[in-house]
Image (cartoon, rainbow, N blue to C red):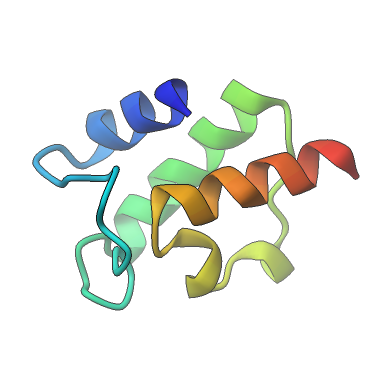
Length: 75
């Protein structure tokens, strides 16, 4: 999770990623941030994020992203 938080802070600093649960719904992360985030996550965690995974529920919080990462690693 620490590596995920570092990636998020590099892409868009100034957000409390540990507690925020409305990153997308609250418009804290925009489409440019997500487009920057996806390849970073894929490289860092050895996963492939497909269009089916690119839904707000998977990106609204660091925990949701962490859960998605673990699910994709298991597939």
